[in-house]
Length: 469
Image 1: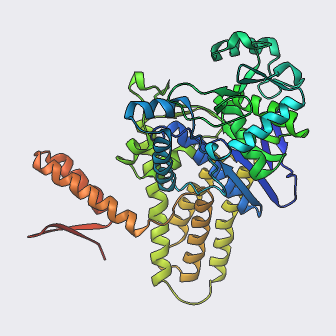
Image 2: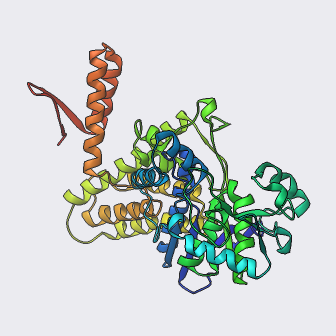
Image 3: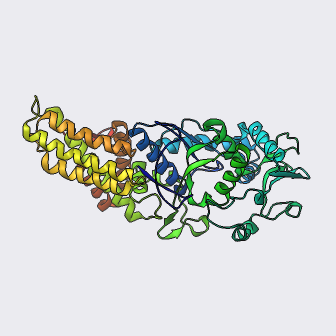
């Protein structure tokens, strides 16, 4: 199996530190509002990578944090007149709901920055003792130039990075020994949450948080560190410097970064009116559609989010679920007994798509081509599993399809409760269209329900529905 390592800028054979086990850290969201679809991409991408590692037989310790102390959280708290903890806890819970709706599995550990302050103070103290950090008027800075390998992840030298740091000015900039030095601890401002430390009552810098949480839950050295490509510099670069200077060992052996998500070819921005939360998408689509869209491009390829691509992903998901449903029906009513020789040969052909799927996923988690294998399996099943096929054959092909989808976090089988919610929402939309005398839309929804095998019945109590027998 090969993974593209941002550190070396090439695909490398993946070899874990400990055979059979993977220690993986993924930077999580800052919880000051509902998560947007840009947040969703790394969540879905690296959840899928984790699922595939487990499919390969690895035991994965998957840690993904919540940044619950930050300027944006504090700003939101001041605006609402509540504590920062109220804001962060609210949006942690909302984020977890969205993750569940996208079928993103909970991490092995979801650490919170505010609960790891003691570890941050300890790491900062160690960096000071080793000469890698210094204190000025309550602020602690990291001596960037003391770490000779600084820039090895972003592949820039220190002079190139000067321009990047010019945009990261903080109070007390003139106190720095070097303008490339970055903050490890900063004194509190009026109204901000704070913690006691040997240097001042204050709070940690952002970068130190992930170094400490990774160290506590995964150890000094980890197999994979992942996140969006916007985190390469300065966040991940600074994590490497802090962790390797403190621990005296390689921080992460492989670095995985997903590319940006654009909206109709333009960077997502509230000011441009093209900003979408996951909840915005959930109001119009099953979030399985969003997940399928996110996996339709290789994770290192910029992804362009459009209405047309969402509709295409919706149709693709329906092809998968319709095929799975048909195979289940055949398996339930099909010929009993063992497979014929012809069916056994047919099953081997179906399983060839699973082999190709693994080959594509082994090539740097290539979900785009792995999805093509699923679509090819669907096409094969629709042609080669007739309605009068044996139950064993249809059931085995179904299980192959469902198994591949599960690795990607896609439900091949529509959950009944999900179907209920979807149908009720469509009926409500149809009724609203009829009331607005938009009969074309109402008829289109009725036809769509019919295609889903849903029969509508007008009763005194209102519109009822049932599955067609």
